[in-house]
Length: 261
Image (tube, rainbow, N blue to C red):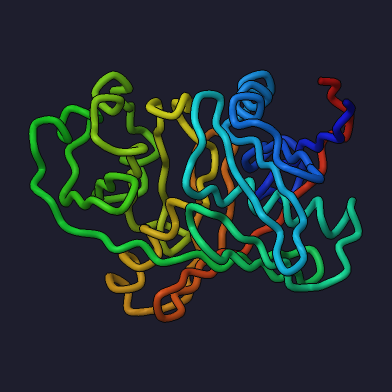
């Protein structure tokens, strides 16, 4: 069997920036072990698969070593593929995940706005285990549904921070978010997920379901401009709307091809 595969730079205004994701349209779900093998072969931080149903577009995301509950950049990449390559007719794409529920994405020109459930953060103690995860000292620590989040004093600390990947891998979490108030943006962040086979993710949309409610409260505003300061960097507009987080970004097509199974 032959399947179309796209590679898209998400949260990117030009090629070779943002976060690359593979997108593979399916007419029906393949076995889970085969989906994981495809993602491992692609060796990107995420591969998204989707199947169009009557009233929804079912979507799943795989890192090279596991299926994840939610992925922002691969959802954005999939929305881009549906609208620009697969000619999906509606402006609202009704994505549905069996792990995360309804995840509608609205297209408006070259921008795509995703609506994700807001994460609920709980402040936790700065334990020795958390302090060991980086070479800088955070001022606060939080735990969300999937990740730990460490807050630092300024953007320079985030940019110069060195992760201790072996310590991060021992955490009982998907990964570690580090963040601080930005210089030219409302806030900056980075994300490390060695547990998922992704040492540093270039731009992590799902992490902004944790970051947005925190910084909305800290800064007293519901709409925020953010940048993930990885080497590839990516810009996101985030808006807190009741119990949802709306995340807006752009995407660029890098490659279209075929895989044979």
